[in-house]
Amino acid sequence: MQNFYLLKPCKTSAAYEAVPKNQHLRLNLTEAAEKLKREGYLLTAETPVLFIAEKEFPVTVFPHGKLLIKNATEEGAQRLADDVYRILGITG
View 1 (cartoon, helix red, strand yellow):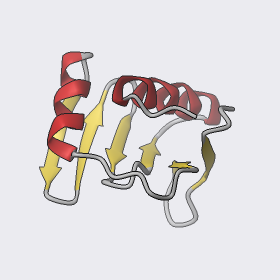
View 2 (cartoon, one colour; view 1 turned 30 degrees about the vertical axis):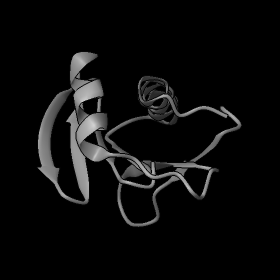
View 3 (tube, one colour; view 1 turned 180 degrees about the horizontal axis):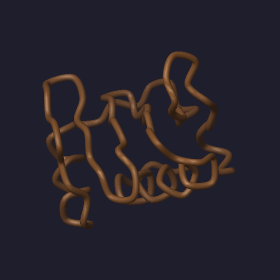
View 4 (cartoon, rainbow, N blue to C red; view 1 turned 120 degrees about the vertical axis):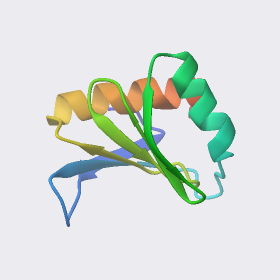
């Protein structure tokens, strides 16, 4: 597991949450969505406060960098979180 984010099971759904340790992170969701699309992610929903993209698993991206990864094993969720954070330039 990377040391710049915390991956844990979601308490309210069958998903994993990845949360950056940087509490002051703010993403431009429009730019983030475009970056993921260029890397082969399919956007399935966009709102002013979040968007959902899908590659291997659906991932909801929030402005503060939190990811909600559904239908994934822990290993799959970690792999997807690593990929999304790499694409978005979020590192330790």
